[in-house]
Image (cartoon, rainbow, N blue to C red; front, side, top):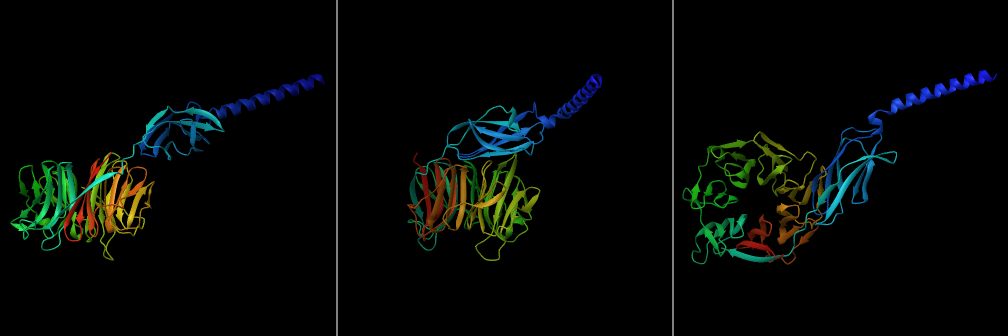
Length: 429
């Protein structure tokens, strides 16, 4: 009897050992345990109040989670579903330093962690500007300016139509230039004919184009030949990297690219005017977007993506508001002005909460220095943290339609109801 019990006990022990062995063999799989899994955490983008960090995991464990620690506080604690994850943190302070690290967990236990990543948020820019107003013309008819370009604080251009000055009230001009001391009126002719210049673009001090057909080389205004493909339409907007690589767009949905020698016309798929264009490097490639719409009903509303290979509309989500201006840089959201202001952020369009004015133009230098202007002399500035509205803006009863921005200078152009106007804002601090 004793021997029988002993044999049964040995058999039970052997079976138990076998089961334990099989279970341990099953649990050895790295995808189950996550032991030794390598985590890499890197800074993807940062603003004044937000940070995006990319987490990569060399082997994705089953039923694992991820914790993101900002300094010593947990700001993210969710299941891990991908080996490449973009983590987002908000509510940060401007011009502040933070330390982030990621922890890989399973069943509440830490499996591995990433090295620490140091993040410095951007500082905000000052809303405080000192304004100065300059007016021109108004002697025999309407005068207005449509566009501006800043080379530096002492070299600013604006273009449009100015009907005379005090010495020559019957003489029309189409550009003004700030030389650091005073504004100089310019009368630029093409083939002996005067015309209103809608856009000016400065590549450098000695490389400036006016509607693409007049070029300033630092010494002379040179008339550029107009190819047949560009005959019969006007230029509203220009963007490019140099005078040997830029795009021009305007009436009837026309888009053309200049390579320094020849022009190539691109099919836009619309006959509605293209009213604005902007480009920047994003994710290692050049992105160029153009705003298509008018204030008239039944016109096309598009945001075109432009490249040498072709043009296509990016508004595939049914956005129906007028798109009148576009701006972005490498790291910012994409902003569109028109019926209010919208930004493309986190994969979708969302409204920016500003007063409900029609907005004519948006420009900036970075996410912490953006200006938008619109109807009823509306001017607003985003400093990276909040929007400020200039209720004391020194111009009234006119239209503000063009703006150029540098780090410490903003130049706004339009009219005061009768005369062409330039408003220069210099940052006080």
